[in-house]
Length: 275
Image 1 (cartoon, rainbow, N blue to C red):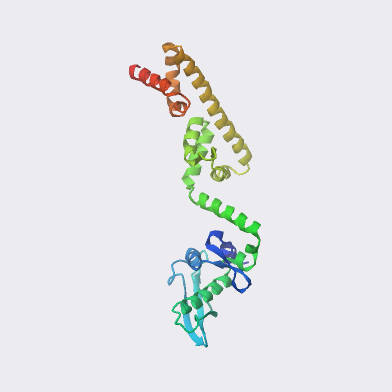
Image 2 (image 1 turned 60 degrees about the horizontal axis):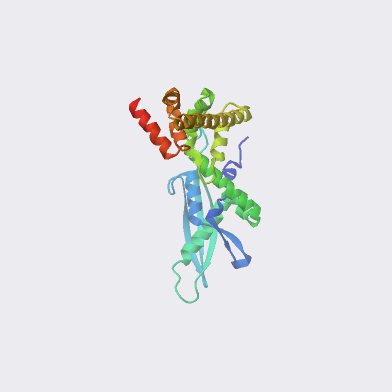
């Protein structure tokens, strides 16, 4: 049985950043026309190739009416692309008083095109009145942010994360995750981390989350232990003690340096030059 709502469901949600509130005609939410063109291009392909429209205009009194016929190619897997067409869809715009309004035909066309898009399900959440609910708009903004973040995560990165986690190499794990560390919050980007968990074996998300937390905690605990031992050795000018730790601390040096003062770092550098 065909999924007749497949296209609708894929294009029905709107990015709030591409809308604005209009107070005219009782108030409504307007959608950026070029944003809709981008969505159609994503769904069908380039305009004129995967989709397009034809317009006829007529003028009645102080208004211009655009009669738009919309066409697109429906592409299903293992099937020949099917050309679909509907219309005409009417869009209207009034002239600006007695002065020639060169934008009137364009506004009428945009009005008709938006209506045509709506018949396919584009931005249906706006036309169904969901944008009248501030809570829904806020939730959509969060969803869009999450979608944008996840769009930047490459499949191979999930594999790299899984290798670092499964190998038990805490230094490798922290090194890999540093690109997703937000210094403003002092946390790793939770959206990305959650995507890494979901990319593991089915049913192991909670187990992997726990292992992730344990490895991060143990990593910084080991850093603290090394730093305390080094500080004690440096303060006592204990070359033997420093030598015992030197080889072990090399993979951790960049993390430890953030917890040592400049004199201690200089002392370590002098030790490295004579080792």
